[in-house]
Image (cartoon, rainbow, N blue to C red; front, side, top):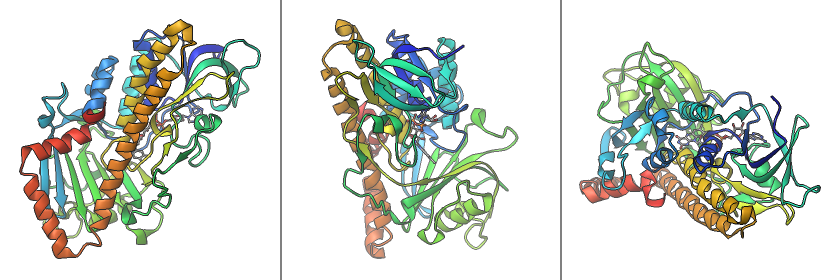
Length: 441
Ligand SMILES: Cc1cc2nc3c(=O)[nH]c(=O)nc-3n(C[C@H](O)[C@H](O)[C@H](O)COP(=O)(O)OP(=O)(O)OC[C@H]3O[C@@H](n4cnc5c(N)ncnc54)[C@H](O)[C@@H]3O)c2cc1C
């Protein structure tokens, strides 16, 4: 079968956000969709591991929640530590007045994408691979406002609406094809281009097994540790999504001390253990001097690194010229920030799902020649949400980084105040509400 030559809605990129957009459009009764991806298979690296409650609501609304629920684990508690001592332990069940899904779903991004792909397949929607988009030009040979989408293969497709779900850097480093073809600038809001967050400027991630089972509070679904300007995260892999059915696998994330230089592209077991020894809680250390049950990372199933940057574009929507179709951007194409807080993919999926009804209304009103106000309104509201999430992650990074410089008695006092505040249910609920995305669906 060859690529169609014309479509109403064209989606560039079959990452989680492009797939969610296709599901949302189909749910709205829009079936004239083409979705392509430049590569033959989805990326198989360690990326998002948690889906927030607001995104579970959104996936449920487009009939795709069961697929991801069936492989994921419900995370009910989140523990925050200062080195070896507790700062806060909180519970997602506090969200029950606001959502049908008072938990976070622990599921690797590869499985989330697989679930969405399976659903699309059932609906008869195919992802065309490998088709790399190289340009978008206003169509010259038609009365309608259309794009000529050009592919590396030489194929050309006409489309009325183009959804850019091509990630943070589809073209080359930090340059996204659809966003740059639409002439939309992308930068850090505070001009904070150096992104100097000390040890948090880089993170290393690994899906690993250990030489012996970690001695941690097993009630804790996700365990976060902040100490001396460092950050680590530890969470068990859901059994049904584990890369190894014969033993327990864990996702670990650690900041990378500045003196280490650039983290390797695929960190090894030794590299990840050395980070955990220096930045993590004593219970994950291989040093018998600090851990009664010393243990080591034994095997790495997948690993990656992340350089902290943040940026949002000036607009989410554009027409390339009066004669061109509409370009709408979603996902990492329009917001990037540190994965701390596990917000990126969840926000992107909500961008995608919220776009379905807006496109439907645009198509329906006078057969698609409606005013672009609908798109402008959608774009403004999504832009606000992205700014708020970027600000949340930057604040978190700022607090952890600053803790390294704060006079130690003052820091201890700050932690004592935080511990006291977190004895109040409403404070815990506020934290969970903010993280869940429910405040800004
Ligand atoms: C190391 C790491 C850890 C992360 N951890 C978390 C986390 O814990 N929690 C969280 O929520 N998020 C996390 N994220 C972010 C999360 O992975 C992204 O937010 C998510 O992948 C964004 O999805 P997307 O669909 O917008 O883009 P992508 O997943 O990047 O998908 C874009 C797709 O577009 C395709 N494409 C690109 N250019 C073209 C082109 N010209 N033509 C055709 N196709 C094209 C690509 O091949 C790709 O498949 C992490 C990211 C990284 C890198």
